[in-house]
Image (cartoon, rainbow, N blue to C red; front, side, top):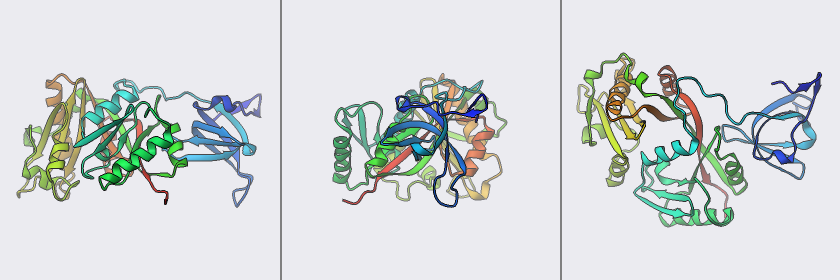
Length: 335
């Protein structure tokens, strides 16, 4: 990072830059790191009473005493888009991904949507926070907690960071109100035609419109697939299920794709450990991509948790790049 002007470190940010993406350098004031420089990049979410709050792309909030600043500047809100990747706003992708994984029950709170599906996955049991709740945040979060408590569910709020128009400020406010970030995932985008052109044994892949008992035996997200699970899995504008038969009644590999206009979203790609390194995940993705291309889609997206190293490597190799990160915050403060 370059902070210098004429060889001098400069602090070129002020409280008026709250809401902008910044890069800062600070000197540790206490402890074993005292006197050492550390850098932080993220959205400046507040600057009050001599303390800066910077929310990083990861959703982590960093508190920095103003007195420790030695340099700082405003930086571009998002990195340059990589050639060949589909262009999309955060809100477009958030709405597309929400339509691909719909809850059993939902309720509006201003522009927010409270979603529940008997606890099956955080995505279907969290608040979609696009827009404004229409009431002060304190009151909105109380209503959220009450709504989920009435259903015997933990209260989760879904947010995003790392792209233009994402919700770093909301992440910081949630932490201030006693919510903790529990899990982080990447939303990645890629070219659909390139995915369909992958060299893969797609002849082994069977595609269908409905989920069957065999597919569910391979699916790892639910041990007892009740009606709520089937409803979520079957939701979306145009849903396809992929199966690669194995030697038993449990498939060797499965996958799911939802086609929604120009977008094809890929989910639930799972391979039996005994069949790994045979290209089955690639075959599932390619077969689903070809079907989505037939329906007029041109762009691909998927979600992968940041700590899933195997899946991250797989999707890197397929040309997917991170568009933004999304997080689930859970209320944790004792009453």
